[in-house]
Length: 94
View 1 (tube, one colour):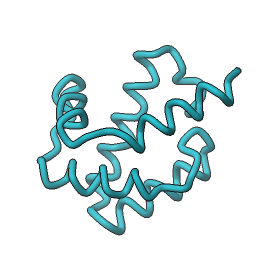
View 2 (cartoon, helix red, strand yellow):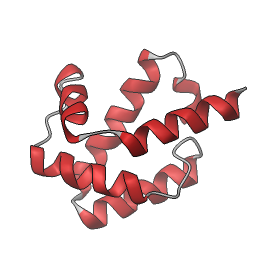
View 3 (cartoon, helix red, strand yellow):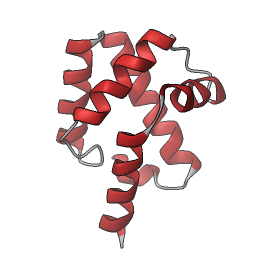
């Protein structure tokens, strides 16, 4: 069951829009610009890593940092953690 839920969440990450990401950033008080959001969305759509595996998430964030900046990658990591906590699956990101 966990694998199915992780696949659904991973698919949702690939389908996020810039506006949705901006809404999440405002909701969790993690400031990102619209330009950063667009770069993040573009990277997430291409991502082949599993964000629920520590090493996969690390590779994903490193790839994002190379495209955008380390600061932006840190913001994405914060967002992932806050979203996971909201839905009660923060233990999946350990």
